[in-house]
Image (cartoon, rainbow, N blue to C red; front, side, top):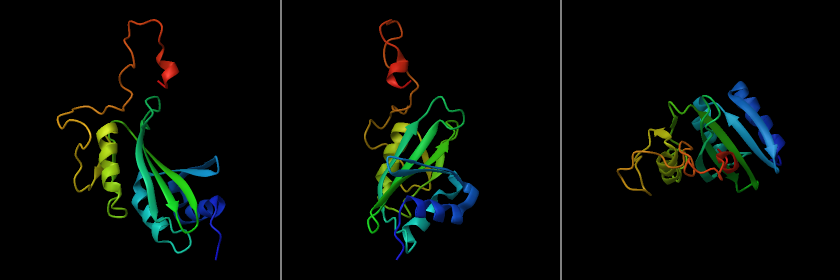
Length: 168
């Protein structure tokens, strides 16, 4: 049986998906893989059922907002874990803020349901095909996405604060 590590995982993903894998980096012994939106469901489905890899646990699914990255402002991050091989890694898909849509993962991992709803609510990412994409944590009539970095953190008239120190 092949021991699955970051190198084996990288090689198998590149062999299967080629140029649709945009980049692979390793930080703190964990892979960060950036992929095209078009392959996300196929990639995660393959990772789950592959006899060697067996990434059978979706640890987390969340959003991130990068306001300074033109046409890559929104990101969906999938954290996968192979319990059999004890390997974890992250998959990133970048989306333009003008059209933050990506297919739902609920058909592969039913647990993605509530994580996608939370990501929709806080970052505005629309998961196409989701069975019940609605607000779950805030008031139902909320018409904005509170974790998008669109508003200054403090009153603009204050001179003792600078947004650059707060990740903006």
